[in-house]
Length: 146
Ligand code: RB5
Image (cartoon, rainbow, N blue to C red):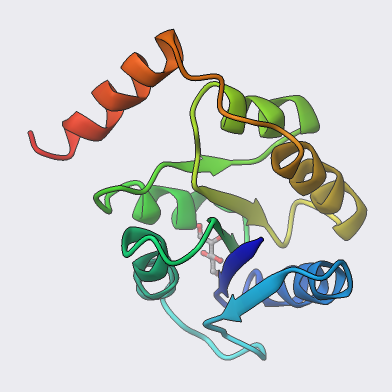
């Protein structure tokens, strides 16, 4: 899959570990940084990472900050982006099956690499179920125009 990754200083270590694992699995990665603990404002990284998703050049985005909260708040302001803050594998699967999330947010200070990979695996192994969920997702997307 084509996956974009982005992080601030609070999420950089988790993002780098995720990138290593996903690369080893053969995924095509676009990492917009940060690559070290450089202090940045997470909304700037959310915008940068989500651009490729908005241009439909990626399958999904992974954003890491300290808690995942700020990244998800910022990403959800961007047209075409449906960001999900991941907490467990069930929610991760539902984020795809019901919400067709295209941006996953994780907390580098709240989640370890093994749990993060379990959640990403659950998401990547799932498919959007469409039907009534498509109607609801279309209503979410329409909110950006209000
Ligand atoms: C940075 O200290 C921290 O506020 C940020 O990484 C994130 O947790 C915000 O939601």
